[in-house]
Image 1: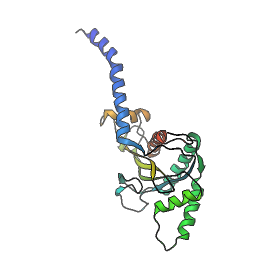
Image 2 (image 1 turned 180 degrees about the vertical axis):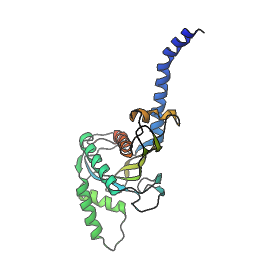
Image 3 (image 1 turned 90 degrees about the vertical axis):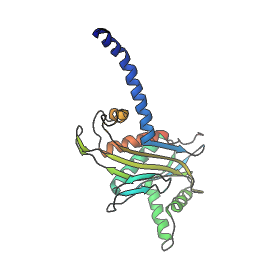
Image 4 (image 1 turned 120 degrees about the vertical axis):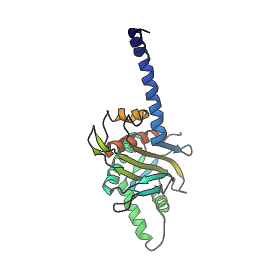
Length: 236
């Protein structure tokens, strides 16, 4: 085959090759980084946005943990309360603009949480029981709650890192009446270079060819999760 024919063949086959790689990358991204499970058909009108909590608080030792609501194993490290609060704020904004729920704010949910804990002082009550009572007190169809397991910042710059950003969190819709998990999703991602994994090109393109910060990686994950969260007021 002549050089000219080889060039023409390359130009013809390259778009097909690239589209195949991108499709594979999308599947890989969904399979390894993001998972979402809805246990039943839902029609949600009113939702309490409890928001995110750190799985490990500052000062605790990094370790492998199990998600306290939906299970799942995570490599976990201490997460600041500021990170959880900011993620909760963004979550509330996304729910308000995208999902059509009647919302109970995280501030109202946290105030209710404090009142319940104080009323049960000296009596053992687990977190899921508290969430159920909060949801029932507000007459809600579900309580939206998540945990952040890891929020490691990259070490380096946009174009060169010693260690990449690494983020993991989950999000759950809980039925107040019985504590059933109506919907759950998790995002667990450490950014990788194309040389390490060509199928991670989806993250590479979303990051515009740069090494993302933990905040950028976390926002990417939250946007992906929100696509799978059931909308309000309609049968699924």
